[in-house]
Length: 116
Image (tube, rainbow, N blue to C red; front, side, top):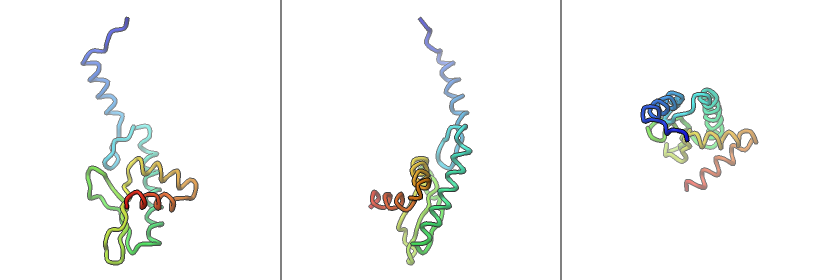
């Protein structure tokens, strides 16, 4: 029979696991994926800014929610927020898949339907 790891070994493993994470915005990303995630995140953000700028009076990156992290926010001509897309790992993953298929507009439309 194998022995259970000691509390000290478990703590060391947990600390090692935390050391293997990199904070990107409000999220902890595994270190091996952090650099690629940051590149994808920036590319998605720039594409969202460009796409939404075609429809809205003003589009900006906003960091006003520590828990949710940075977002791309679209405003109408009266400067009223119309759409907010958080740059979280889930949205980045979905948006990247949509970008690969040249369907970022469909991704945005889907978010609008689920928000409203």
